[in-house]
Length: 159
Image (cartoon, rainbow, N blue to C red; front, side, top):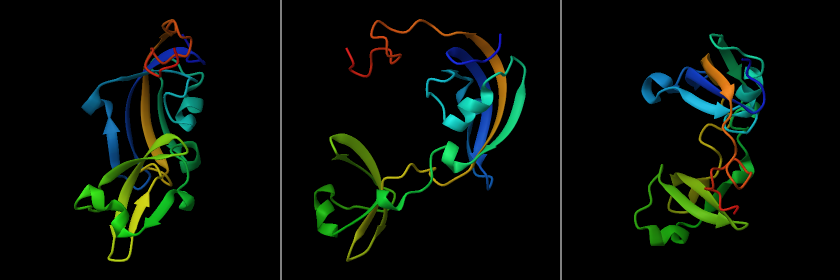
């Protein structure tokens, strides 16, 4: 069977940043299974696996724009340190969840001075090209969608 949109695909993989920082592998977490074309994986990998067959192996370098996006300056915020007083002792690397335009957003504190706290809302891998080594282990018909018809398994609250 060939990997096409809406087929369930199982892969073994390793992935890293283009500069060689390891991000994970199936040796650590086991094979990964997803439905092609549903947005379960980054867009660049999703597109590149179209037409693959069981046993095929690939090495891809996917540009940031097709992975986790480019780093966006407008997702970096600078606040007075008093704005985070309720957190207690804030430190760089600490994650903070807030709401923006009615949606939960996770920010990471990247710097703290006496004058400001810098928070970054970009994905931690934004701006990085990602290298994948992938082997197709299985391709099959995807399971039927749940009763909600949205493919979320009923976890998105769409019912």
